[in-house]
Length: 608
Image 1 (cartoon, rainbow, N blue to C red):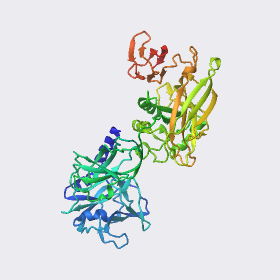
Image 2 (cartoon, helix red, strand yellow):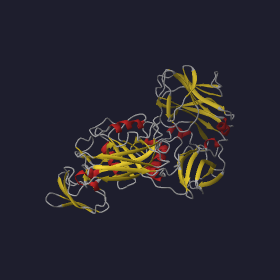
Image 3 (cartoon, rainbow, N blue to C red):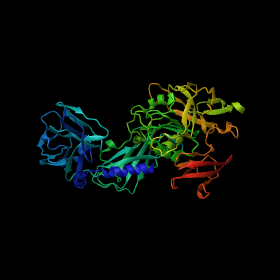
Image 4 (cartoon, helix red, strand yellow):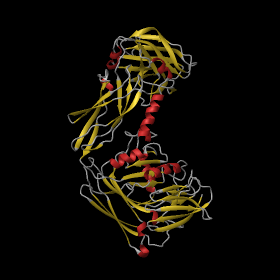
């Protein structure tokens, strides 16, 4: 999480436009606009003007100063005709002041007002009109009402990412000293009584005085707590990520929390309209039962980027037995390992389908990790990013229910005949109108293929869904009353039971809303113990060790690994505790390995 926050801060700081730095960063001037950086053209020919609105709550801070110049971004200056900048208190013509403008360059054009516009402290529109040229927009820095002149009528312009590419420069002796904007990141909303709850966000400095300290106030349940951050150095128009220790709830219960920035350098913020967070609803418990998290990965053999993504998943997840992984061969066409249920689950994308992708506990985490959702915040499936952070959130979320597996086998020659008994009950109050469902899957890990796009030769698929024993959308159960379900299945001979698991999980189902199908808890049980000793279930000689073309993956409990050349020369070795051993540093060729595992010694041959 630290690295993502740091990257965000650096990118935001680097994005301040050169023009804005030249004029608005000076101590005797302030920037009047919502955008920054390089502009893009996004409007059609029906848009012939644009305007920003600044309310009285902000403009009162600038009373007694003067608007001296305006910067306007134009992508096609040779096409622009009749460009006029205006300042007015109403968008009804005639505007209060109109300034003819000359634009001569692609990019930011400086327009010096023939006479400075004295600011009275009243609300204000800053805008422009033009002909024969599209209106330009630039990355949004601040929120604020904006309008477009469309077919001769002013209509609201709303865009989370872009703002109209215009800003003014205000100078004078009455510029606001302390004025900050607080943007709170949605926190993790489960708490333990007596423990602090970390809060993160970003502060933007809109005052001409450098920010050295900030005071925040937490308000909840009629109580307040304060926390001060010292040692800051945020210049005018600068921004900085802030990490707070956060509030501590003394008792279990439900809490509605707001986080407010209440002082800048020990002084009240001159404009507190942008200092408070949304209201966040916390569930606080004295203690809770840990859950296992269900991670569903979407990937196919046609996906060239999937092998690299799977290597990243393996690096983060490997060895964490509280992550129950299921691989769906869908999201980017299909392949020979696709099952119907996986195609049906593409519903969870909401919008654009792609691979590699994943969802954790069928929960949309856009509020916490918007960068994970390349195509908006539609459904709970996102790009393969923020794995460590999302896993941490999922594992820190209380289990809302228990789910327990008991798998038995006929044994002997009928060892593939399985009986699966699943039980569970609710642990915490479930959402109103919940529709409890039980899902039971058979999955197989390390399925060999030579047809994976993006892989160099041999490849092994991860935790692929082989069969849904329950209905695709789960079998109805009553968690509040406790449930029992029994399933029987015969595992096909062509499936390697040494690498298979039974996966079971419980959660809500809402056929009308893919964001209301959260998983409450999950579990799994490996099937290798049901395979009689000495029976080889695949053509591989070492069912406990797998090879993906680049690395050897060792079973839990493996005490040592040695890799030899055909002549017997030791090429590399690894000691106990290692689960993945990369062979990337070895020359191409044939190698033999010897792995000392919990069930004896395994040997095999691999080709690099």
